[in-house]
Image (cartoon, chains in turn blue, green):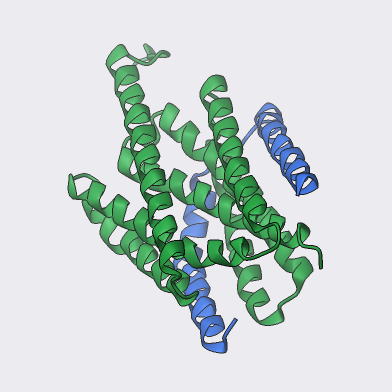
Length: 60
Length: 222
C-alpha cells in the first residue's frame, strides 16, 4: 500500500475512534446487564459462526 | 401509583413492528443488489485502489452528517442508496485484487456465499427466538473501538497474524451486531427502517470484506 494511502486510512480510522470514543460512556451506562441465559443464547450462534468460518477456510 | 401495568404489547404495536421489519428487509435486499451492481461496474471499469478509501470516506460522511437529518423523510431512501452505492463502488478494486489470484473466483464466491449464510442464519435465529440482545450493546461497542485501534496500529506495523486476528474479531463483532440490530427491530427499540437498513448493511459489508481477507490469506499457496 502506498504511503499516502496508509496515512489516509490511518486518518480515517483515527477520526472514527475519536468520533466513537465520547459515546462509549453513554453506551456503557445505558446498556442493560445480561443474565447467564442471555450470554448462553448469544455464544451459541457465535460459536456456530466460528465453526462455519473454519469450515469455509478448510474449503479453500 | 398505578399497578395495572400492561405485560403484553398491543396489536397495533405488533403490526407496526412487523411493518418496520418488512420494510427493513425489503430495503436491505434492494440496497444489497444495488451495491453488488456498483461493485460489478467498478470491477469492469478497473477502478484504482484509492477509490476504496475515497468511497469509504464519502459513505461515512453521509452516515454521520446527512443520514441523521434525512432518515425520517423520503430523502433518506436516496441517502441509503448513495451510501450503499459508494461502498459497493469501493469494493471493486478489492474484488479485482482477489479475482487476480490463482483461486480468486473461488475465494470471492466462498466469501459471498459465506456472508449470506452467516447473515441469514443469525437473523433467522434472532427472529425465531425473539430474544432481547440489547445487553450486547456495550460489549460490541467496546470491541469495535479496540478493533479500530488495532487496525490503525497494524497499518504501520503490517503484522500478518494481527491482520488475521483483526479480521476474525471483526466477523464476530459484526455477527453480534446482526443479533443486536435484529433484536432491536423485533422489540421496538428501532422504529426507523432506514437506519435499521444501514446498520444491517454495514454489518454484512464488514463481514464480507473480512471474510474475503481471511480466505485470501489462508487460501493462498504462499
